[in-house]
Image 1 (spheres, rainbow, N blue to C red):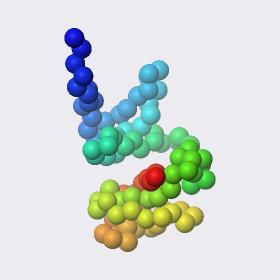
Image 2: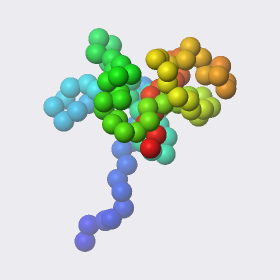
Image 3: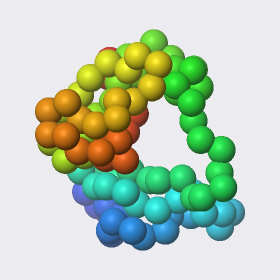
Length: 98
């Protein structure tokens, strides 16, 4: 009888992640209880705010801070720094909130 236990991938920050065809998707930027987050490889096309809203549909597209978990609404772009802990923009990422 097959196990009903979930299988979790062993990933760590900085590890490269590939799709089924062997193409690099990016590197692991962070890991939390919901899974892991990947930074796009250099030279790849970035996802703009309008594109993110198209991808996430009716969910609210927000930003979230890796350092402190603070979340906020996105105007036209991510803030320069986290208003809660002053982490730089590089520590902020798009977040879809229902």
